[in-house]
Image (cartoon, rainbow, N blue to C red; front, side, top):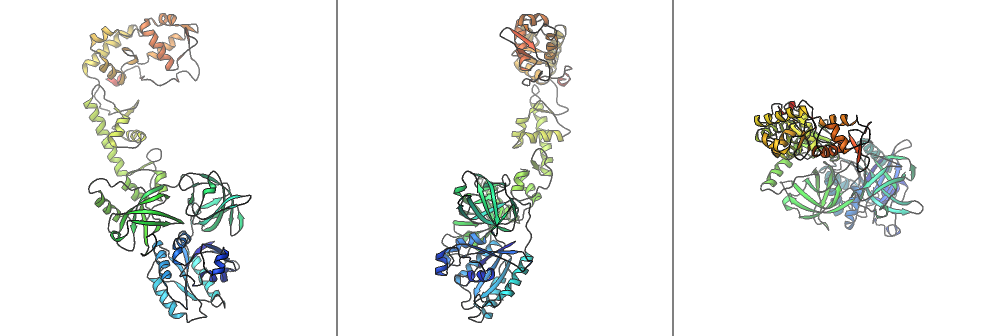
Length: 608
């Protein structure tokens, strides 16, 4: 199927022409037929030849009061049937409709000069062809027709078929963004919405999310051209029977989306066509798809601006929209979305720098360029902006610009070495501190940088350089003395007096524990690394369960050490309480699965 909209001045015969082409009535309301004036969007279709594809028309009103309705109809449609009456010629709404199409960047059209039975169509045809050629439509085919006599209709059908064949094929795998132009209730079925599906595929059973994220809806049924379908691919006119909380609140201007594939935004940077940005009103209406949203304009460069929208919209880089002064009066301006996640402009000179940056943007989705500019971004966010991912993630879903990633590795190594020299008693740089120093949004990025750097080693949430200085000599000597004491009685932790004698205070003990030279059981109580596993092995030789006194004797230690040591073993999942007086050793897969504690290899090499 191909879909196109009509365009042209009021009472130039748009509805009569599509009625003659399709044999269907585009005016849905009795008042429209009685007055001969289209007030709302109409939808009809025909087949282009016996074996040809369907061509659907979105018939739009031509009166100046209904330009917003015309925008809702033409916005999602890639082609147009432009209508000018031979007996009236070019009129104000002909010009405004043409300006809207030019602003949207529409490139495919056929010109129909209607009422050719009432006046010579050639002067009007020449004038209209010339005007259309100066816009995005370029050189178009033109046909003189009469909806009354039928003259020229076959030729017009042939030109429409040629234009339809030239339209680009949509991507059936694209993410769905269905702008709604109608919403109503069908008895026995519930809410039905309609729109022009520009790309992607809808299937019965799909889940869709509203543009503001307030509701997730299930597709209960699909129709296209009044036929029930199991799936519909763009481009197509489609009616969707949806079900879910909030479905009754759907209306024209809203949008249904593939879940988790779109970014919604209230602030966008755009390139503006038409009048100079500085001369545009600061308050305008942004028309995109079928939506019309208030927008506040802030000039940035000569042809670029920042728009702050009245509500969030699902937009992507390269989207085309129309900026129109409420109530008309000015030629509508076309805008191209350049950035859907622009930086704040709070610092002095930020506006000038941003203007230079925007001047270099093309408005075409370019994943590599976006990654260079943003340096770090989640892959899902880049794709949701409309740009393909140019490389594999560095970790998880994170993409990184290669040059920036190399710079980060060097900075992280330098910060790790700087920390080691500045804090000899605490040489390992905590991962979280490294994240803050580098200004990174996720600690997983720090881990990935460390893993990719031969100059770094990660251990227990800290980063070390291979040549990180060990513990100061006096601390190493004191730790060696503790190790000699514990070699004889491994569970008799040094008394406070012995620690003071060796010069081991709270700070130096913490450094020795961090370096893996000692194992902290509780405040002021340290044993050798691996003592917890050895203690559990000794306790397994006891009849189970055992008491505190039995454990103390088996371990050859004091109550001062035995109580916190057993609590430590409980936390490590090596022992467990049976009742207030007794414990038992845990066995099987669950053993050792308690909360993690600082425990290192018995050799203690790391603190050297």
